[in-house]
Length: 243
Image 1: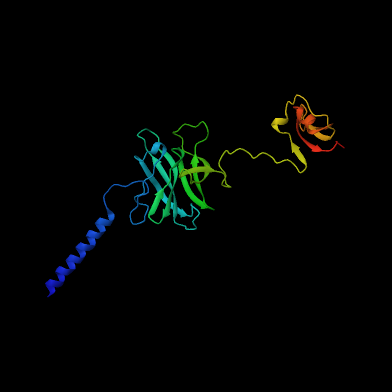
Image 2: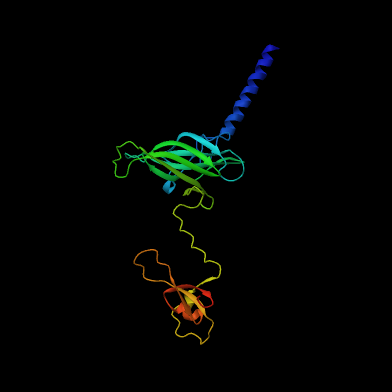
């Protein structure tokens, strides 16, 4: 009787092991592949779709990086060794979904930098590390603190650098909006051959050649907006004659 129970026990154990092996599958892993929902088998890629020689560095930091309210996404350091003297560091995300983790494309941070830590704040990740002084040789130890703010560009699935407010890095400054009552001259109003003989005065702001700042524009009354904007020195005007 005892032998019978032992045989049944062995069969059950073998069945469990078999299921585990089937669940685990083979040894190959694709971008975003996981093992039991962990980060162990996620494969990341750097420029050119390269995955060979790419490894994680240090421990991941978890938080919400895709705006779903779950604190299960991971920000990681990556290193890439292309066979030369450099060790290139990257920022990358692994986003948790119902099937496990999906890797983002990585952002290059620097060659032979000194990683410190990662922070996640309001959907942004901050990579803190040290770099060399400008002009120092690569053999010098990194000693200058630097922080790079990044987020995920969902349209490209790539980590991109942003400002602390989340705006794209090096984005153009927004054009200032005109004050209330100020009308900007339109391109089609420039270089008119002739303006209609209509007296509807406007106060044009005439730019002056600046020798020493500040150099505010001078007010000048024009008979109408066409006359004002035909002057290449006038960018804007207000209704009515100048006071």
